[in-house]
Image 1 (cartoon, helix red, strand yellow):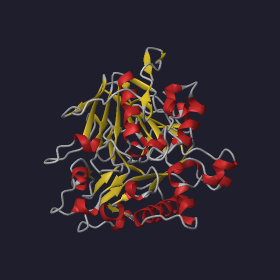
Image 2 (cartoon, rainbow, N blue to C red):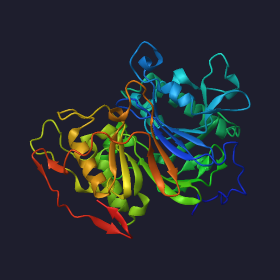
Image 3 (cartoon, rainbow, N blue to C red):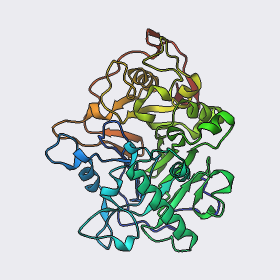
Amino acid sequence: MTFVEGWQVATPQSVPYVSRLNMSAQISFFPVDNGDMTLIEFESGNRLLIDVNIRADADDPDEDVPDVATMLRERLDTDDKGRLYVDAFLLSHPDEDHCRGLETHFHLGDPDDWKKSDDKILIREMWSSPIVFRRKDRAGSGLCKDAEAWWAEARRRVKKHKNGAGDNDGDRILILGEDVDGKTDGLEEILISVDEEFNNISGELDSSMMARLLGPLPKQDSEYDEKALEKNRSSVIVRFQIEADANEDACRYLTGGDAEVAIWERIWDKHQEQVGWIDYDILQTPHHCSWHCLSHDSWSEADNPAVSDDARSALSQTRDGAYLVASSKPIKDDDSDPPCIGAKREYESIASDADGEFICVMEEIDKDDPEPIVFEIDENGPDRAGPTNKSGPIGPSNFTKSGGDPDKPVQRDKGRRYA
């Protein structure tokens, strides 16, 4: 395994694990309708939260909305000061359905100001794209209250780092991707460049995982430059390699926020000769199973909306038995987007080619006793914990509303199957 330049090689002997050593690796997808909220628990014991979508109704016991805040809290530990915490929190991009509930449920500000009476979750380390800062400063950015709170906290932590005081739990931050015009110059110690691998979490190396940053992608041409600050183009894209039971490559997990079709086309253009950087055992289908991640056409308005071959290729680099998970509302056969029935059909076709499974989180939960969709990871890879998919595939891949190409060839590479 390779490591970020400047970091020593991580081994169980050289890096002290926390008290949760030998826990099993898991990935949990919380039932938040159209929104993202995913918790990765590594074998080391470190926990990484990717996005949060805790609706106000979820805090009201009289409302029929899953209490995902309690589900999350039940999966966290407390530190020696009695504070529940996540080791790291990755915000994919500052849309409300990816950061809703941040101020209500997480401690922001000086960690010494945490109060037992509030009992909020401490974020030991923030993982943030620098584009968050530029969206805040851009006129008409439309950041919601929770996104502005993230922006303010990220700025506080960067300032602490610049002042040489940012290495305490609750003060740390990693900047994911370089900014334009040298705006991230001088932050090299906390900066991860696009295409770089890293395995440090909350100030320590973690030998039970390796992450590769794939996006947000830098500006490329004038057309892209003009839209570079658009919210869905700023999404952080990361492919994780997760260790389990001494298999350092037990599970590969790809997540990309709301990155849409043009981004996935660029990902394919960059990495089609090195698909080992983007292949996966679990894919969180971007933008809540949106058609716009696979096509430039409108699902509801175009007569024959066409799939982008390049975007589909980027999102179909499956390993055998791969799971494709849509964090979305139940998917209906109508003109909605997201989630979109056309995207579901594409992802079901990709899953079928890999002898895998497509899962929509809100279609799978028990409405009387909702729980996250959990994948347990052992040396043989990820396996779904709890009930299996109830709906089954709905048919072959559709490249237009009226038909499909069930005979599309499957590429093979070193024994792995790719759609």
